[in-house]
Amino acid sequence: MGVIRSRFFAIVAAGLIGFAILFFMTRSNPAGGLRWLQAMAVILIWLVCWATNAKLANLKLSSQNAQKARKFLVALFFGLTVLLLWEITVRVFGISKVLLPAPSAIASTFAASTDILWVDFVQTVLKGALSGYVLGCGSAFLIAVIIDRFPFLQRGLLPVGNFVAALPIIGMAPILVMWFGFDWQSKAAVVVVMVFFPMLVNTVQGLQDTDAMQRDLMRTYAAGYWKTLLKLRLPAAMPFIFNGLKIATTLALIGAIVAEFFGSPIRGMGFRISTSVGQLAMDLVWAEIVVAAIVGSAFYGGVALLEKTMTFWHPSQRRRT
Image (cartoon, rainbow, N blue to C red):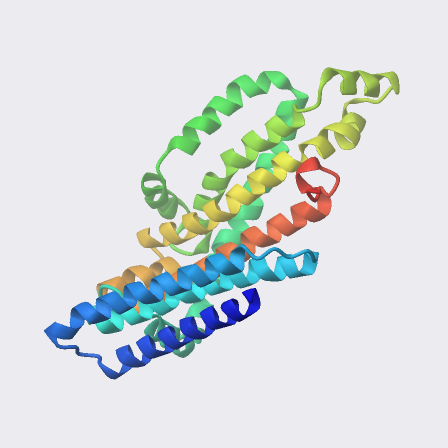
């Protein structure tokens, strides 16, 4: 009986969604009397999709693979629901593409502008964000090791780093552009400033996370500072280090894009967004936003996957029983 009810619910939901989509696509300019009906239909579609997704999320599955597939399907269905409602709302209410372009228009612009998007990706992500990320996180890690080796430096360097981290990027970016030029080097410098302090603080905290008993045990084995660092402090600090690396992934991309607003060659994601807004080409702006979202998610996911591989022994990475 439960299976029959589920199938009936799915058929009704699919029928309602199909009818509503057909209704919207065939009446792009509704009369005033029908507009409220279409608004109610939008709400109905949202409720049906919400109920379907909730039912899918609450399914009790015993298999581990089935649970993973369910999580993926729930996220996928939610994303498709948002895109569907977005598309229908724009078409039904005649929203100007300057205010909010439809997902289909964004996808069309994305497909037609792959060459431009690729050039902007290389300029902003590979040259500006990635190089600044490596330099900023690498230098922060080295400074953190020096601070751990000579604790008196913590009282002098951390307040300075805190001060630099508190500086607004809107104020720092034009200065660094004037210092390092209009190409990707100035964007990398902005990224270095943004990612340095979070990485430094997390690494210092991680290196100091070991307790006195662990350090005393290393001394009984006649281990010096560097051996203790490699065998004890650094492994214990890995979760903190990866926490800083994950925070820096989002800061790096934001810093590189925002820095391009203040001076850039005729390429780059920030440059393209600012010029496209001036030309009212909002579909291209949204295409750049899609690229930034994909890159940011992939960047963060890659670091998280590396963390899971390297810190599999940590309690936070163990599977819950």
